[in-house]
Image 1 (cartoon, rainbow, N blue to C red):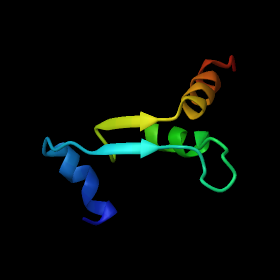
Image 2 (cartoon, rainbow, N blue to C red; image 1 turned 90 degrees about the vertical axis):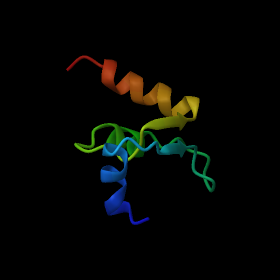
Image 3 (cartoon, one colour; image 1 turned 30 degrees about the horizontal axis):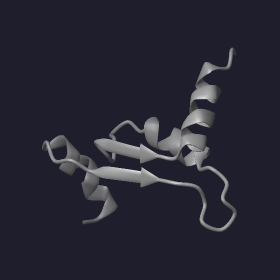
Image 4 (cartoon, rainbow, N blue to C red; image 1 turned 135 degrees about the vertical axis):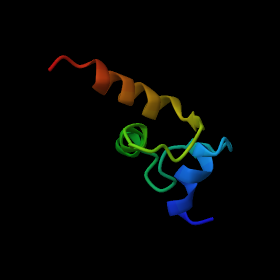
Length: 66
């Protein structure tokens, strides 16, 4: 399946599991990737499994006062 087809696949009621973990080379969390994925207009997944560091950093960035 092409990436361009995934949003329509989800819209038809199909489930897509996205797993996101730390970088395999430097072990840094992928917080920036997670934030982009969570803010997409048309989601590319229905279920998400993410490492705790990325989740925590993402939540902390949302909770920061502006």
